[in-house]
Amino acid sequence: MYTPKPYIEDDLATLHAGIRAWSFGTLVTVGPSGASATHLPFLLDAQNDGPGLLTTHLSKKNPQFDELRAGAEVLAIFQGPHAFVTPSWYVKQSTFPTWNYTAIHARGTPRVIEERTAIHAVLRRTVALYDTPLGGTWDFDAMPFDFVAPRLDMIAAVEIPVRVLEGKFKLNQDRSEDDRRGVIAALEQLGDPQGVAVAGLMRQQMVAG
Image (cartoon, rainbow, N blue to C red; front, side, top):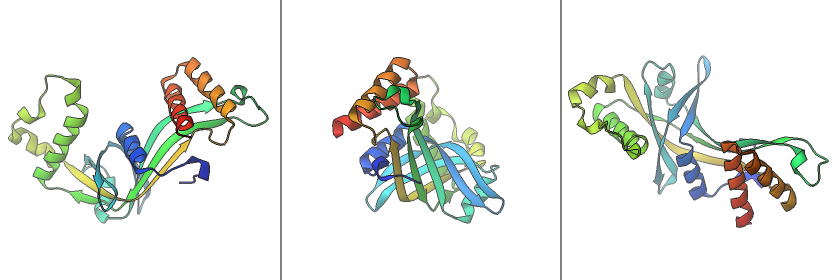
């Protein structure tokens, strides 16, 4: 990922927090027919010997499944908040419009998991992360395994030990403090959720110095 120095984010805790917050990512592979991408929910585990372990699952009918089994390195993309920025919000306006955004790229060699029990465990973790906090009445663990098993045969789990983890937080770091405050105020006034989130990240960076 092309990242000029002011926008580099390499703090592992910050990158992990971003992946967990923006965990519906894009998995990119390159196979004989070219590049493929699938949008998937990811789980993240910290690792002592690397930047982390990503886990997801997908249908075996997805052509990308065969590319994953081939074992070539993959790219997982996690897109954070983003917002258009107009020079009208700057004190010094002799420049051009831009886009503030946050993104994290993770690269690694995938391991495909087809064993029922292991896939079931991945689904249980995924449900616990996304569904259980909603407090609904549906209970995945209450479903008979005989009912769940045929579905498990239709999907595969994928583990990606992350080899390279890159973060780009482009938040007007190359502008003056007055310009950045102008952007923050404008984004907050507009009230778009993405823009408000970008403004919040900009405030955090200014406080962190």
